Picture 1 (tube, rainbow, N blue to C red):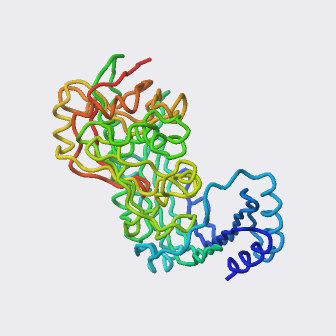
Picture 2 (spheres, rainbow, N blue to C red; picture 1 turned 45 degrees about the horizontal axis):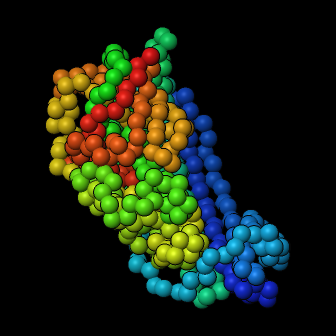
Picture 3 (tube, rainbow, N blue to C red; picture 1 turned 60 degrees about the horizontal axis):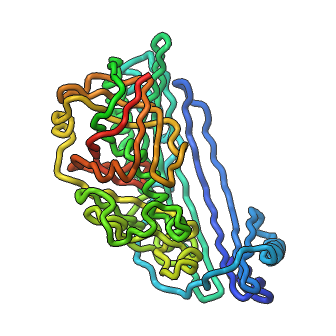
Length: 427
């Protein structure tokens, strides 16, 4: 394998080396403004190399698989100015098998991808011909090769498949965006179900419901839960914890959320979007409980951060990045959750996520798609409304967790979650 050649060449001057090669073949079908816009197929190759020279890290990347000498030279040269290495490349350990390849994705024909896009558009148009629709489908077939100087070596094939539909509904000066999507490594996504969920979002938004500023209960849909999970994921990032910028950096073993709340990082779920046997550093993936019954159990670490913090990597390299986040389901049906709210909001998507100070858990966002709940019923869409609060305050104020979870983007599995009170600002 090419990666072995890179290791052999690097080790003439380096004390350690790691090489990875990725090849992908993709097909993308996209519709814009109700019509087929493009059908594209492409092939891509990338090679990355990381070396340790005199205790410092060097790295380089190329798309030219013939340039083996060049990528080695650039990696060795960059090590002179690199950061200190707080780790050694890991020896081989057998990872837990997880299925990430589906022959039906690879054999999926372009014509069929076009047809499913047309069917989704037709279904949404049947509900309302005035909605302008975008839609599409994408498939990828990937091959990965990895090798390091400590004897770790593997290769595997993987697929990915995603479909989406969204639309714009203009009524005078009012513009509404809504849609739904799904991503999986297996060809089992129901495109009709995707379109129906998009239609449901539009139906609930037919009426614009007035809302006043104040403190009120908020129910987050699985998609909307990202409002809270952004700050939380930055909090359990091992690097932020080590540097002390995370507000929960010294809270291992302590309660940081309501006892009903549990979340796990799990890369070993067959066909989930972020699943694989190994992380990007040759470390076997694992299941890592992050919060159990409200108690913080673990941070996520890559090799370098674990070395700096005196911990063991959790197989989340490079970058202490989560894989598939699984929020434990509760016991309350969504309809019952809504019925128990006298006045509040259902939040599905927002604008401005990440602005402000997300590391501290603070958020202040514009609601892109949200709905008014009044006397136990969803009465319509809210407009020109902001939502503000703190992730950790909200997680400690959980009133109910839904009994049915959904996959969001292929890497988050979560139910609806109701928070007792958040600040709502109407303009």
